[in-house]
Every structure is written in C-alpha cells, then in structure tokens.
Image (tube, rainbow, N blue to C red; front, side, top):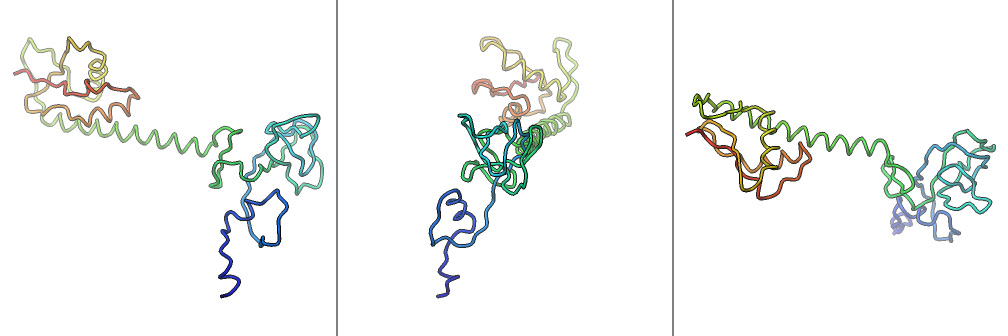
Length: 214
C-alpha cells in the first residue's frame, strides 16, 4: 500500500487543529483556511502582533486579544490605517468564505440571507392568502338582506377581520358574512396569517369565523 493510500488525514482539519502549537514529525504538508477581518488600528501595531477586536495591541496589561496583525506585512501599521486581522485558529463558529465569530456582529451576507429567507416566507404566505381570497370571490355573490352588514370579501378585509377575531372576548363573537356557497375558513389560513402578521394565535381561536346570511 502506498504512502498516499496510508495517509488518511483530513485536508480540512489536521494543520488547523495544530496551528499555533509546536508540531511533531507526524505532520504533513497541508493547506488551511483562516478567518480575516479588516480592522482600523487604534495605535501602532506590528506584523504578527496579538491584537484586540478594537485594533489595540497586547501590551500594558490589555486582554481580550482575538488574533494577530497580518504577519506578511513588512512595516508597522500606524493609527488610522487598515490591516487584516487574522483570527486565532479554531475560534470561529463557521467557515463558508463568510464566517461568524462571537466578538463580531453577524456578517452582512448572513444577515441578508436570513432576512431574505424570512421575507420570502412572508411573501409566500401572503400569496397563499391572496389566492385563497380569489378562489372565494369566484363563489361569492352579493347578499341583499338589509339586516346583514356585509364587508366585501377581499384581502384587506379578511386580514382586518382576523385581527379583530383574535382580540374578541370568548363570550361574544362577531362573524364574517359570506355567501352560503363558501365552505368554512380552512385551518391552514391561520398558519399563513401568523407568518404574515407575526402574531401568535391561541389554539382556541384558530377556527372558522365565516357565516352565511341564510
């Protein structure tokens, strides 16, 4: 069996697991990823110097260093200049070209991704309700009874009534008048309503509030 076949090391972890320590002769050539962050120096710092997230060097009793100044620089970094801060190995929470670290805010890309996902969920649920209303409108017909106060069945009125419904006292209920050709409000409506509005609906209120004029 060749040396290449015998070498079962993971190309993603071995060197990174021992970086920053004295290694032995079992270590082989490898390649690694390191997290970097552009930082503005608050004071003069030197290549390879251990620094804080604020760009302060590890001296005069300062603690809380999280990495080193770009060790490939050939000159000092003066206050106000930007440099690459290389974070200590094995301290970041993820590594996907965009990384996360406890001492830094969530990355713009990650925040944007989470926001887009959330927005997409809202848009999908809103679209479901809009499509449901359109289907209802195809079955609706005008109710001419004078004693029935009927709101037109559209998206805004349906959502407005749902808002009122979840706030009504359990001992007194108003109902949304619709054509007797419509079936009851589906349970799925409440799932989408919660996503769109961000409101939590109590289980006992996730019921049908449609009623006909008959």
